[in-house]
Image 1 (cartoon, one colour):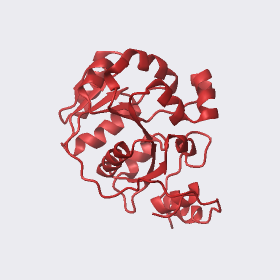
Image 2 (cartoon, one colour):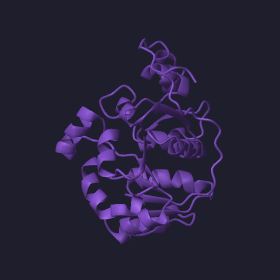
Image 3 (cartoon, one colour):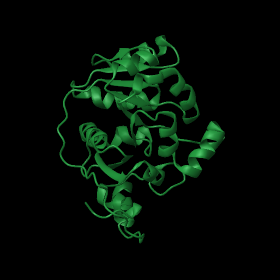
Image 4 (cartoon, helix red, strand yellow):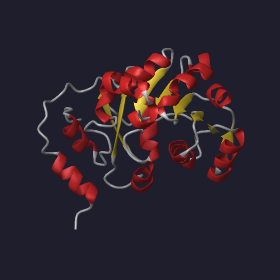
Length: 243
């Protein structure tokens, strides 16, 4: 009997949506050097993603949470040399800062981190929910989460990604064949290439949907959200040209 993912991949190939231009940055086989990763948030999202990139032993990781003891507990459980620090320390430590907090916390996080993310890649794995995040969720539903996050971190090299699939599914599907697709969006082509490389290292296939405005395609309430499927099927589902 075919798996749920196989069914999704097959049926989504027949979605008839208008084709959009192929993004300028297509995912190649990027080879990236060791990168320091700082996580703002150490819950399910932060700990899962940190675990993926610790696994290869190439990327030093620092986790932060509401308290240092909470971050230290997660780091200890992950092992692999994971460290704990405050959000400010994690941002200062990192080449890439990963946002893994409730979307409603972004204004406070932006104030707390200040210029420490300036010029750095900022991977935004958050999701806006009206029931939890209030006015900023309504803003993100209207304008798109990528565009709204960029307003709070204007000096960062923002990439939206790893927000569209539940962490339980990611843990189950990493390195499966065929690999499942992770949609990514951003305006900085070099940042997209770097995050695409990290996506492959984690065991998935990146699909660049376009600039930050296109991140709306895979936020809650839109067709790419919770789409656990292959890269060709996701491109068809989102109306993107084949790779």
